[in-house]
Length: 458
Image 1 (cartoon, rainbow, N blue to C red):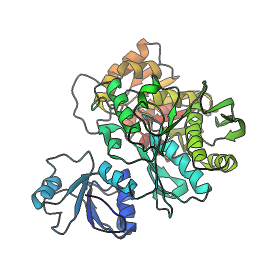
Image 2: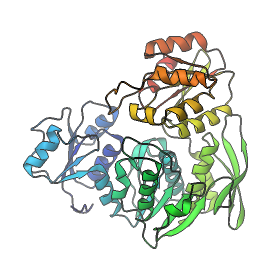
Image 3: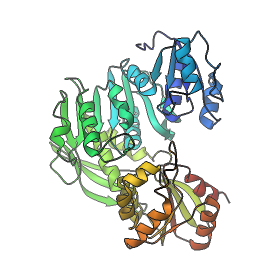
Image 4: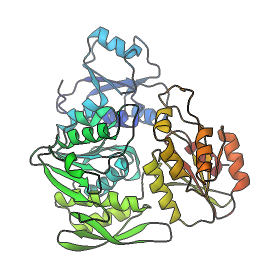
């Protein structure tokens, strides 16, 4: 089935409360599609959808679907034995995965800009969004987080530009139709789906090959054996990165008192002035360079780019300051992969503080087991760390990996870790241990953010 935004149909979203699904539902609703859906619980997102006139069922049972539906859209989390999924098959309703729908929507735009990579997709897509909006290009934006600049996770523009992030998990991004793409990095992750790093690299190679001849690939020049990734790519290739001879790079990186970097932009024509960010960390200099490269390819001036980047203050759960308790600064961060953790810890070193405390919630048993040594190694560099229980997400406990094992390995490597198995005791621990002027980071892709929220609201 092909989706045409000018030809509305009746669409049902199973799992409509997800960050990406809700954005797509909002977009189709704007174009007068008849939109309905289901989720297992109410949230701020589902309430906003209902306020927009979208009917939502808060159970996924047989009978929710009606025969007049033209399309059933499901997330990867919806199992093939889900009652709604089985009902759609029985009723003969066409079924489309979320990634397929997103790909179809891209085909409705002249310029479909995709941001891919193992880490940094949401931040870089957000940076691009600020730049293109500052340039008055009014793109349609779908981002995997809540962005203040657009008032949520979706912005419906009035131009031929579509900006979105492209996730490699389950090879979702191979369903897309990008005209231009960024590859930020390629690391071992999602090893519950991919066999190994070579399997992941093959997927990114296939993604790059999707680009048309008149398109552009902007790729991190520090990626190992980079030529292989774009060997089948027909589009023009531009590189970015730090510490190398790339099309876009940076020098003279400095940090202000809050850990925000400034740097001189270097392109093939030479120095292009200073750019200051309102987010922390050297990794965000690299993210910004990719956004700069994309913006320049679309004719946006450096002064507009730098003004937009200076105004971008981050997205929710990306080194987000939650507040304070007992004069202790509390920051939350979504990092759940060793490379992301390393970047966040480096950013924290440039942040004003006395002592640094970290609570890390591992995300999924499979990831914790596959990257166990890498997690322990990077976490051993933190000053003080509490390891919370593993957030299972979609997985069952296999019985051969747990957070106590991770804490023990961190300590064996010279770190200072304790395992505490419930949030109430973790809060009590920090109330007792933290002192005025300290920094506490809650870290992980699960619900660990609730610890920080409850501390600052006590």
